[in-house]
Length: 302
Image 1 (cartoon, rainbow, N blue to C red):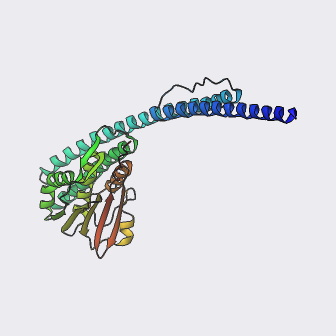
Image 2 (cartoon, rainbow, N blue to C red):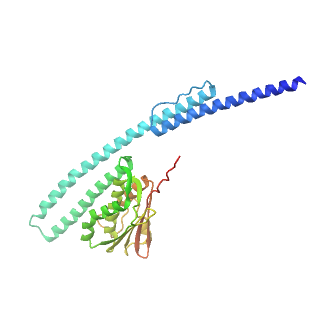
Image 3 (cartoon, rainbow, N blue to C red):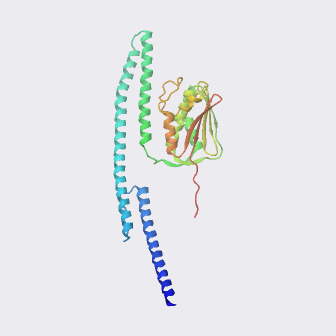
């Protein structure tokens, strides 16, 4: 009769030991998870340390530390390469600007000379091409910096209605010169989003430039209460195939003069960086460019 009780006691003891072992393992794994989270979130160079005496846990920590060390070396190489690329792009951009400025200066001097109408026409063609090359240099520089830059220092709460109004006001003289009277539809409610004000402003200016290039004289700018911005304008010379390629790098349509095709690509990159989405569509001879801003994150109250 005593044997069953002894067996039960041994079984209870084994279960208790197993339970304690599981608790210790859980504590050790939680410690490793916290270490990994700190490493990934803070870009810390500190490797994992565990207080456990368990051989398997210590072996796991050693394997993870080896992987983290490799990631740290790769990150250093990436940052170094990124910085070198920025320096190279800046240097190339500067090296191109200098001779382009000189060419523009000589062309201006030639215009002041007594030359034939044919020569003047050739000079005008050269000036247009030099201006396009200069613009391409600037936009290539901006595009590269946009791709490489992770600067979000000005990220904060932005009232989108006000930013749109400020962008249009700053561009109004150009629109007026092109005889474009924008129709603006903004909700009375303040639409607020947490994003980079400078990046969104750059997108607005790029889209206004785009409207000048492709518009037949009209422009609608709308903002919904859901945070969707729409630029719409009549563009009878476009078609759905061309519109589908508008975001392709360096793509330009035949009627868009002095353009590099980088503006919309830069804009979409900036919007995606802020967690939004951007696309274009063509309906009934009208070009629509949609910007879906990132949604407002719900606040959690404890």
